Amino acid sequence: MAELYIDGRWVSARAHGRREIRCPADGSLVAEVDEAGPEDTADAIDAAHRAFHEGPWRDTSARERGDLLLRLADLLARDTDAVARMESLDTGKRLVESAYDVADVVSVFRHYGRVADDDPGRMVDTGNPGVVSRIVHEPIGVCGLVTPWNYPLLQTSWKVAPCLAAGNTFVLKPSELTPHSAVHLMRLLEEAGLPAGVGNLVLGAGREAGALLAEDPRVDLVSFTGSLATGKGLMAAAAGTVKKVALELGGKNPNIVFADADLETALDYALTAVFLHSGQVCSAGARLLVEESIHDEFVDALVERAQRIRLGGPFDDRAETGPLTSAQHRDKVEAYVAAGLAEGAVLRCGGARPTDPALADGFYYLPTILDACTTGMSVTQDESFGPVLTVETFTSEDEAVATANDSIYGLAGAVWTQDAGKGQRVAARLRMGTVWINDYHPYVPQAEWGGYKQSGTGRELGRAGLEEYRETKHVWQNISPAPQHWFSV
Ligand code: NAD
Image (cartoon, rainbow, N blue to C red; front, side, top):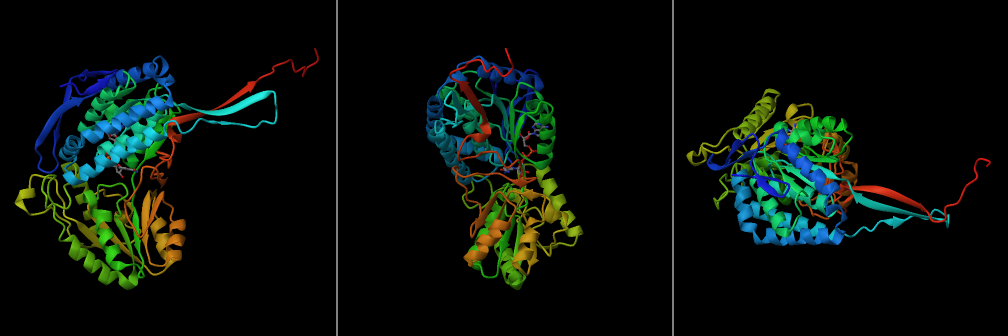
């Protein structure tokens, strides 16, 4: 009954708001949880601020913080089954995918646990023997962490782990649709020994529970993953107090297939690129660019396989992908497809809800392929965040690159070719934060992840280090101070 975690205590929302969480696979009630308002978020910010400025956290050694994260990773590994189940009930995604996600989460916390004390700073050679000059890294302070619903705990781990490793305190606001794994994470942080006030959790809607994180002067950094529209609003709000801002936003990611690719493999990956988790993946390969000479054979085969994808709920062993996250989100995907058809796209498959009565209570939408698309259409420019693939063609390497780059987004993309030089050339010219050659979707916690252009600030998660969650300070010490006599005495 009390799911907000503020200053080391489990408390109820002050205004006693409650929200029903429903499983997107069948609309069943998962649980009711607290719904915070700005007054709860203010309490959480207050606790994080005190813990940073008055508590012992800021002075803990980096190794102690790293060890806490390693303990947390062990606890998460212990609870894998329970956490995977929570994620599946909240998101509707297949249990097996949730279990992969939890394994990823464990590896993220382990990674930051290990690297927490990797960076002791450095000395600067000033050429002056009377001076000691060094560069040190310090925590930024209070971090507001706001996450989406598609990979709830994974997105959270990418923020909480570096934030704590670097010595910050935080207020976490997960998506209102998928709160349960964040609640469990706080319980495990408590079990791992996190001091009161260092980590705080508020649940609830963005505007009510989240907006203050971008506005309150006591918050030093706001790290956000979510949609472009919300990210723009947060960035503008954060400007009022000149906060550090890290944004991971949307994508409209091209998957480029040249005629000289291994077509069987490219086809197989093109399906997972877009239909994994019903397209609710920021890096989804939702925009297929296929060389004109192979368009017909490639797209015919793709359509044939897309029509055979089995939909189902988290615990259906035969299901290959699941529902959309909410009825509202499905409405948006339907409107997006309708706009594409009105603009001249050709529907090759899907474009409707499934007719299977067993799926009638869930928010399902059939894998959909829209052919004959061009760069000017809204469907090739806007993110649907659903199981919808648009198909465009090209006839040269230059045209493929130009078409792929014709987007406000720049999150990720892929190129398929057996010509190694062409793969490298195209990858170098794509204006995206991640480019896969002959692959789609893999990532490792040690690598960078960030968007070019309007896909983000491109600087969340220097995952190889903790840069985003640290300030850099230059300490100059005159070790033999004496009068300068610049002005005559
Ligand atoms: P969203 O922007 O609707 O919500 C994201 C989070 O922001 C939620 O917790 C929400 O409650 C909160 N929020 C909303 N309004 C707010 C406000 N005014 N102040 C503070 N917080 C507010 O996004 P979503 O629908 O949850 O997620 C889908 C989007 O996330 C897609 O665009 C997807 O591409 C993007 N995404 C990006 C990445 C990446 O790594 N670049 C990863 C996952 C998802």
